[in-house]
Length: 100
Image (cartoon, rainbow, N blue to C red; front, side, top):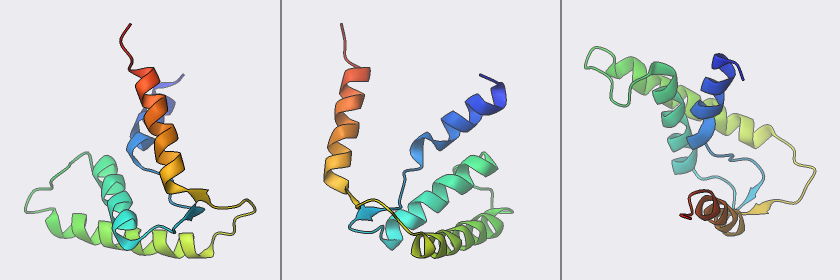
């Protein structure tokens, strides 16, 4: 695996899929994904005072565009249930980090 690909794999770990779930993603989830994306791209969890305006503007604009994307996407499969998918993820995590 190349360094760029490894970085991409690690970068996206905390950004969750928002499309094709029931109930649909709410504004808080879209905002959280935008914030996570901007944090990863900028390399900063809390920008300096000099960069706060640009950081917050980027989060707002990305959340706005993300909502448009989610509104326009068409799913060909039935929506997934959030609780079921969360339980599956929890089970995978427990198996992955289980102690011997």
